[in-house]
Length: 181
Image 1 (cartoon, one colour):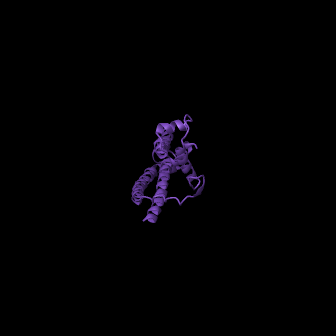
Image 2 (tube, rainbow, N blue to C red):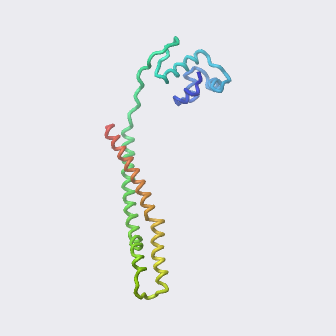
Image 3 (tube, rainbow, N blue to C red):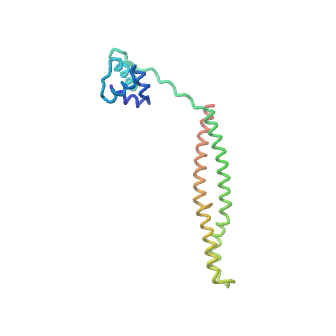
């Protein structure tokens, strides 16, 4: 029986598998590469391990019987979950403040974009007609640049996505902590 798939299935190192089989690690390595055959003892140990994959116990005489129930997985570490929950909540507060700051920073630039069409549509005389168009372009483009690079929709959406992820994580952790307590 090939030991490599069993080692992989159970996540065993060569050292650990060799110890189970009662052979040296180098001997196991040679066997796995096909350079050395297994002994009867190794065959029995391998058979025992292989049959557990099928939910059976090898009886030593060529037969088998059903394996006892599996051992339970250790319960979650409530302290670790609660610690991460507290980290999430603190990070959420920071992101909520950062999001509010982005909204405040964006407000004057959004106001510029709202005002630009009305300022351009003014039909009356202006003090400096040749500078008016340049000034309005700078007025609008400056707002667009700030919104694009610093505090606009992209920055806000990225922050909201991070916040949504943390909220989801915190909700899941809070439920787990409550169930485990």
